[in-house]
Length: 233
Image (cartoon, rainbow, N blue to C red; front, top):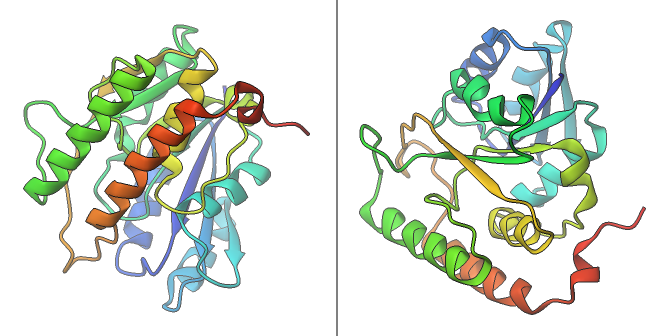
């Protein structure tokens, strides 16, 4: 079973090389697709150095947002399973086998990596509480029964994700895909993962206003007609 790893990247020259080395070291049949989202630093040129190792680089002419970068990657992927990988070093690619394991074994179609367990850290306390609130709302509105809604490590069977009509351009990809997989009846399986949060000084980009947007998306999509959630080729 082939894994497609989509890496949305915007001005990540400080970490992209180390991240790709870690991703490539994981012993799984895989393809790696980096979507440079209009970076103004050397992110793209650093990724190009990995072309001979099979890393595919796609580029946006200007910054469009994480969700737009993910959708560009989805259009190019060829794997049976897809996972989203941020370009920083907050998440450990060594967790891929654990995250996709339930899908490979036929136990689940959607798997989230749960950061909120003993031994993991939180860069800012307010992020923890905003994340807890989003998780609570997802559980109340969609009966998601999860512990970590805004986690980056979201893995899907490819046919499931391509069935969904995705529209988000920014960080609201996370609540959008959570809402839509639940509205379409897919259970979200969770596994514990490692997490090393970075600070704003180290390049963290998400802010508290993204939390408000995510909350609105969860509420809005609960009311959307079901037929509007499905991708129509």
